[in-house]
Amino acid sequence: MHRCLHVPEVGRCIASDLDKEDAYHLAITCKDMLNPCLDEVWCEIHSLEPLIACLPEDLWSNAGSQPQGDDQVTILDQGRELLPADLLRYTTHYAPRIRILDLRDFGTGKILSIETLHNLQLLTGCQSGALSPLLKVLMWQDAEYLEDLAGQDYAMWFPTHTSLFMGESVEKLTASLFSDDPAAHKVAFHAGMRRREANLTNLWITGKEVIERCFQSFPFSMLDTLAIHGADMAVLPDLTSLPRLRDLTIRNPQMANPPQPVSPTKTSVVETFKLLQQLRVTASVSVRGDRGASRSFGGAP
Image 1 (cartoon, one colour):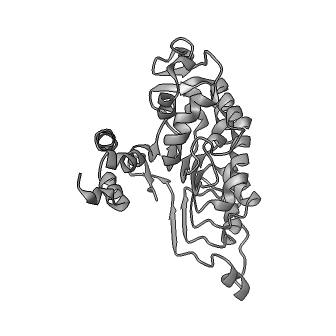
Image 2: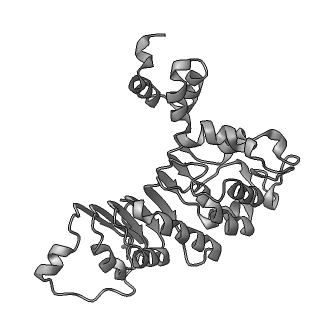
Image 3: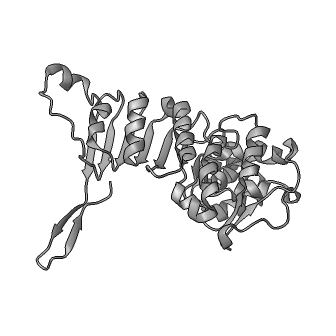
């Protein structure tokens, strides 16, 4: 093997140009490329199956259950006690490599039961981020999707275990929450936000109620990039005081309670949006065409 592969930067550069499948095959055939390729394989995760694959097969009872008669997903139930040794392989070799976790769509396959998620919390001492300690980006799960996938109870209680992944290193959060989401889902999100908002530099959030509560409750002192969708523009005064905000995107704003106009003063001009460099506002507007058809105009940020 060429000695240049012993240089970590070279290995990482090569691995970054590979897709997950090629990176995996190179990892198991070249010792010098093992770590950079595994970093690439585990960098971005879109389901719980990589974690499940690291747990012993004898941990599960039978073949699991299929919620609501759906043969596209299987909930794995424990057949025995979860032991520290069961988690050691995952936490030692793989969990620290995860940088991006997308919980919005598990696709098809296997998911963990609520009991197992609860046992994982207990086994890790309820430590935030125990299953992805160096995670940078988290896409929060959607309640409606979880309910369609595995039922109402799963949609209610899965979010309460998101702290397993949401550690101190999380810098970007994407989430959509709505007024009819389960109360436990909302409580879990705001509890996670309370622990991590001081570190967030990038936030993409959808839902009038959750946007209003977040910006009335948290200072977001490190926030650099913000995208909000469906917010009442009464929240705008709360956004003007964000001390580090440079990039703001507002999609489909609502004007149910428009803020009162304020005469500009020297103080207000200096102290609001002090660092803002880029602003995007997009909206969908329906109008009547010549034949009575409704046309929609707008776009994504």
